[in-house]
Length: 582
Image (cartoon, rainbow, N blue to C red):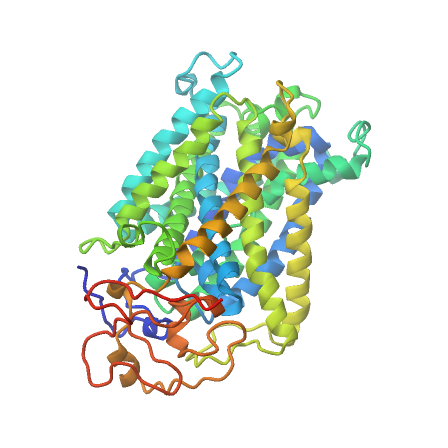
């Protein structure tokens, strides 16, 4: 069994009830790079530019600042939480502090599933770029067949996911080194590409007001098609919470993670927005049908404007961006699976939470995530509209999981229970008096955008034949099945076993040495009857703090013993079963 690593740089992992088992080696730039690479300006902008443009024309670019403002509100809320709780599986662990057990588990479950789906959708972006870089990358058919594009995309994506699995399983140092180099290349390439496109502009910014011919057949007119096109921008600006999800592996995380979150979303907005603007202004002919085609898009504009050698050099940079984005999405999914598994909140938790004793990374979780990410691609392999379907579903799940944090956070603010008085040693970032307003806007934005994205529109979920009701409603059916199935799994089985596994729990001795008294006031819905260290082990009112190495309020457990207390379990090394109280 892996022995927990205790060090001066643990940044208080014991206060969350966990031992420091992961490798804490990520610096400031690597933390920033993790958030930027998940958002990945070049990946997201180039992957769905064709969809946004073909749906709403040049004016679709206005969805970019709209999405930024909404997501910035969410990012600010997350930065405040990251400044207090920079732990793996951040969204899941934040929800544990703010809400009931079912709510918190569902937040982690939805983000885990969305990350798995997003991993596949990001890797699919290779299909939009590689065949334009070299025709040899079109290995299935010649690209003209009905299913050539989708089948080749699944093949390329599966290869990329396999490479990402090997890198992430090898260790966080290798992953972050590759990621940081890739992000540096991506940022430099984005700046140079913006300059090149603006230099070659053939029209003025007034074209962004041109809506002629778009929305004429939509009942809501241009607004209707604009809301559909907003999916292209919404697909890019999420995943900034990755900087916090890597908090257990980051140096000085309570200060580093909040800054990384805000900088990542801001930098992505500025560079991505200028890239969109430059592409639209520089396109030789906006009526060219290739601009609105999946095998054309912004890549086609770059090749047309900059010519063969220079244009293809930038396409290589886009491929680099897709690679590092895939690594970041994979890494975030691994941390979420690991975080839930060490709380015994997933099937096969003991195996999924295993940390390699040499590489100090969850290798089993890395492999399982990689295998699962390929499954949605195989299911949709014969679907020509695979890009919009998989992308939209992944965004809906992520927006829902974010809502499961911002909604209870707002409730805590209204009840004047935020910040939670749980004995946290420091606060890395605070919204102060602006917290309520920012939080309200974050909730309104998240709810509105989720409804917009999940709406069963034919343009997104069933844009090509055969036109069937179950395909058009596929997003609603899939998200509903994941949410309802997850709640049933938790309520009927998981909640009866929840509790930190012994090999991941902080020892009672560590808490006693730190002088914890066990009385930290009211923590809202979560942890009212427990020591603050139990919050990461037991979830809300639905479980008792009987797991490893914790103290009940006012009564120490296992005093005088140097071994972790193991609840009601009689055998060392096993988690303590937790009785449900509702």
